Image 1 (cartoon, one colour):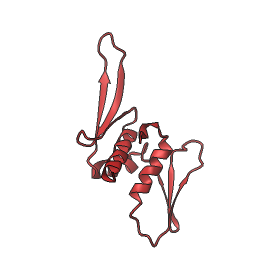
Image 2 (cartoon, one colour; image 1 turned 60 degrees about the horizontal axis):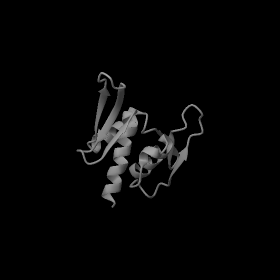
Image 3 (spheres, rainbow, N blue to C red; image 1 turned 180 degrees about the vertical axis):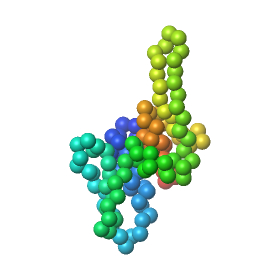
Image 4 (cartoon, one colour; image 1 turned 90 degrees about the vertical axis):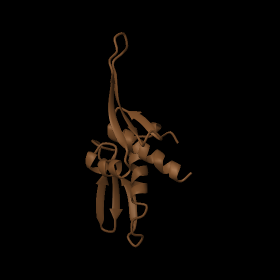
Length: 122
């Protein structure tokens, strides 16, 4: 699947479904969109009577535990060669096996995380 074509919300939802997949089955869980115009990318995870908000593509506090646990590298690149258009991007990878480039480092890392999950379940 080409995750780079998905919206931040769609990526956040895919990540949340994986992160919360093994949660205690005695507590029903539900993923829902936060209908807030200023940030439509958030995902709400309801567990029993509590609710947690996640935005893995834009919130370092949500993304970092996944990046750390899965040993995803994130690196900044800048091209400013004479005669070439200046460009900058972030690249995330898992030991060179799964690589993604994006303007947003957390989004790039979450796409690599999803690619890793696909490879684990292929």
